[in-house]
Length: 101
Image (cartoon, rainbow, N blue to C red; front, top):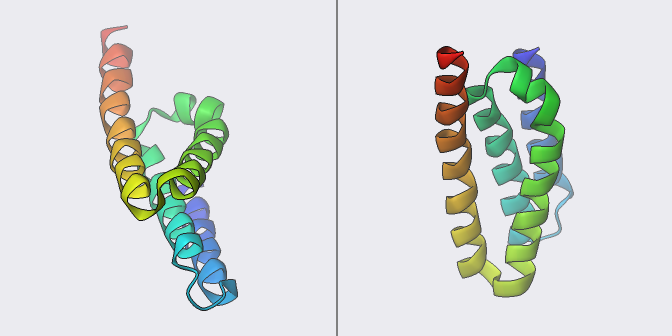
């Protein structure tokens, strides 16, 4: 399953790159970052991913779009930095909770 998700993520990124009009760096940033974020979700326990992955991907995409809309590149970089650290920290917390149970 993980291999399928990884392949879909890569394919979506390629499609976004091919379909993006020239000078559409924002769309490219969104596609690439969404693919990378999807890969980070593997850090979460499997049961947690099954339950929340779709919602987390949706929330991530909305945050990046809002960052691009509200503050351009500077705000989107801040949003991306925060969004990429959050799954790492939360996954560690989830796994430690799971081990304690």
